[in-house]
Image 1 (cartoon, rainbow, N blue to C red):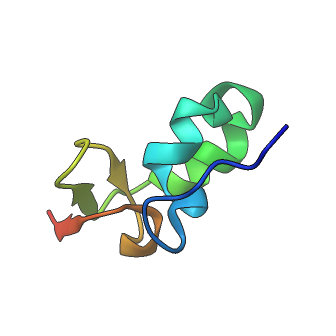
Image 2: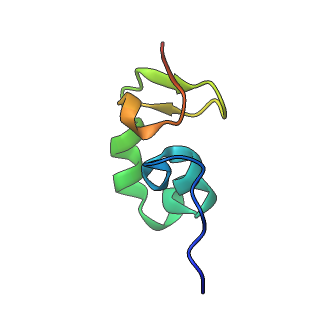
Length: 61
């Protein structure tokens, strides 16, 4: 299978991408760590994360 092109560097580490792959169900505890005590919201998809680096377009809450 050919690897998908990412829209920007690091996208494969963002919740936008990981959630579409089912990361929240296959790696529940890791997902909880990324979202626990959310401080940032993605302006693209609305997901919340503890660290800005886990979102495409983070904005502080």
